[in-house]
Structures are given as C-alpha cells and as structure tokens.
Image 1 (cartoon, one colour):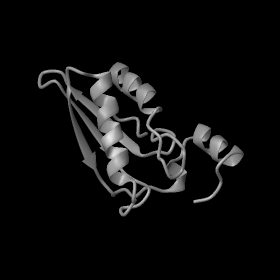
Image 2 (spheres, rainbow, N blue to C red):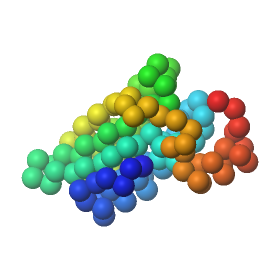
Image 3 (cartoon, rainbow, N blue to C red):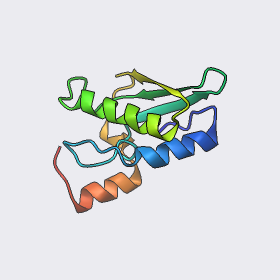
Image 4 (cartoon, rainbow, N blue to C red):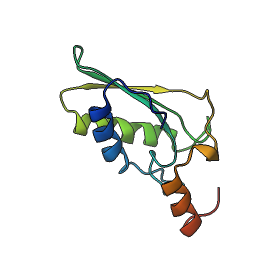
Length: 112
C-alpha cells in the first residue's frame, strides 16, 4: 500500500483486517497483493475512504473483491460509512506485491 493516510492508527487496524480479504483467483490477500492504494478517515462525517484497484480492469472477481473489502471495513469500523474508490491508474503490476506476498507466491501459488 502507498503510505498515504490521514490516520495511521486506524489505517493499521484496517490493513490488519483487510489481510483476511482474499483474491479468490490468486489466493493471496488484497493487502499483500497490492490492491489497496490508500485509506483515509473522516471522523466528522464518520466515513472511511478506500482507494483500491484490481489486478486487471476486467477482473471477473472484481465485484466480489470490492464487496468483501467493503464488508470487512464495515465490520471493522461499524460507526463509519465505507466508500470504495476503484481506480486503474496507476495500473496494478506484480511489483506492487509485498515481500510477504512474493514469498507466499514463490512457495505456493506461482501462476498468473
């Protein structure tokens, strides 16, 4: 994830929980896969804003992934409205995968 947030503590909590959201085609979580670009929190409006992407613009599991991210954030921050901003610029690439994700892929799932 880009290290862009306006609330590091809440962002850390969100990322910890988002590790449970798995891309069903790849088997890796959305954080280590590099799909989460930014998380921001508006405590006045009680809203969380998640900017994210998918591995491809035409990802067949895109709706499922964004729904699972939304549900995860809603459960983690029940008093906040969740807003997903799905973008494709900058495009996702394998370089966005975390070192932990690379290790997992090298030891388990290796095809894209």
